[in-house]
Amino acid sequence: MRKVIFDTDPGQDDAVAILAALGSPDEIEVLGISAVAGNIPLHHTVNNALRLVELAGRPDIPVYAGADRPFAHRLVTAEHVHGVTGLDGPDLPQPVTKPREGHSVDFIIDTVRRLPDKTVTIAALGPLTNIALAFLKAPDIIERLQGVVLMGGAYFEVGNITPTAEFNIYVDPDAAGIVFRSGADITVLPLDVTHQMHSTPPRIEAFRQIGNKAGAAVAAMLTFSETYDLKKYGWNGAPLHDPCVTAFLLRPDLFEGRRVNVEVETGSALTRGMTVVDFWRVTDRQPNAFYVRSGDADRFFALLTERVARLP
Ligand code: RIB
Ligand code: CA
Image (cartoon, rainbow, N blue to C red; front, top):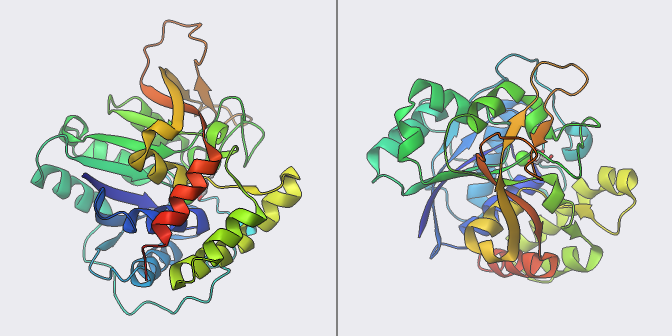
């Protein structure tokens, strides 16, 4: 059983990642959801996280509000992909539950300190602002964490929000640099693997065919959020990013990767947020992350569909 805190900027793909985790209660205990500004401003990411736990029939799961902006840059959002609310597509009711009192960084710190060492994983699906703040405020949790499994970065696929940077790292490169240099046990699900996970029409239809509320909502989410990427890439389906984190937590055997060094560009305006991955080990920089290079797309989508099918 993995005890997991999701740090997220939902976002349709974040939503699928969280729903698949909530559909896997025998393998993942979702300790709470920490919202961060990213795809859309913080008030939307908090509201969307609340709507998601209610859609999954789990209003008991605590949702906390975290950072509303990156460390040093102005917030860059992605409404062009996710819509104004960040969860455009399905018609989800406004939440009846409220976010918990307190900042999500304190929730992360208190939870890691409360539970036995090496039992809590942070699944990071957005900019790494909250994680970096938690590491700065309470460095002791770095060692106590089981690890951080994050969607972010790229090497072979280079960038999506700029020619050289992936969105989550680009929004807060300073926070990403802190996390990658922290010494935490880090697993990276970068664009190199998420760009192999195409949400083709049959794969979206499989969610719709489940026949439950969650499946219908996922199909509507992916149908909305694919528009921009289909035009941009011209593929047979839009890449599905954040659920690669949940799938890795459930079935790491679906993926291949290697331990390498990852550094983040924070100084250059041209390449801000680029993850400089020493994939071919051409430097003496010490490996600091398990970097996932590829995965089995068919089994990935089958896993997600099977887990979403377990929800109401
Ligand atoms: O680059 C993809 C990442 O940026 C995903 O986490 C998506 O939700 C957006 O946050
Ligand atoms: Ca995200």
